[in-house]
Amino acid sequence: MRTMCFYGAEIRKPPAIQPCFIPRHLSAIIVTSQADEEQMSIIGFLSGIRERVPDLDRKIHDARFEFRKWTRTTLGLLFNLLLLFLAVWGGHALILGLVKYSWFLIRETHVGMQFLSGASAHVYMEIIGEISGNIILTALHLNRDAFTTCLAVGLAARFFCAGRYFYDGRGAINHLAWFIAAVFLTRADLFGVNRPLDSETAFFLYFLPVCCMLDACMTFSTKLLPEAPALLKIKDLIVLVKRIVTPPPPRNNREEKL
Image 1 (cartoon, rainbow, N blue to C red):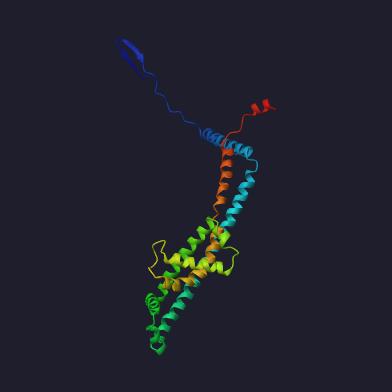
Image 2 (cartoon, rainbow, N blue to C red; image 1 turned 120 degrees about the horizontal axis):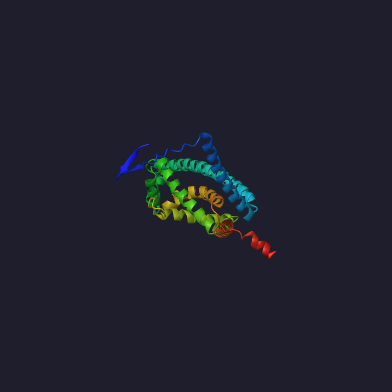
């Protein structure tokens, strides 16, 4: 131990503090005890929640079951929509191809020449002009536009309860009115992706895909989206969260009241 002299007085320098090393078994015990304390605190928190909400486990189990059921149903409907879209796309392309190539045969005949001289020939010429390119791509674009509009109509009708009162269980005339309205909504280009067409040309090109896909989109929207009044049930969820978060009154006060 070193000494220092200060004005003739000898002062001893204190020894250096050695680092404290904890044995491995003691450190393991300390870590285990800390983990046990954290686990006990979590268990106490969960037990407190179960005391406030006695049927919490049943509600969690029901929510998991409903979510899995909704997921399976939604994926199945999406797969059906995809198959329907592909089938309508192929059928529509086939019909447009027949119209296109039949026009090349008819226009050379005497009937075709008389038709071209008529007043309604411009509508047919516009239709032929729209499908004069690649039939597959044209049918794809037309079906994409029709599918987008049908899905938007289905979601809006589901959310605002219009489908339940004016579409589900109604007759063919009512459904036909929905089809015509969806055709003109597709022509209106609500999303800015459709091609500008006049009323007659749009009705001829969009009517078939809309008729084939609107009912499927309405069914898909029914399974996917709740109606607006059903969203009012979120109040029950808020009450449940308040019951979980709000601490219960102390037990002493309960005993005094009893």
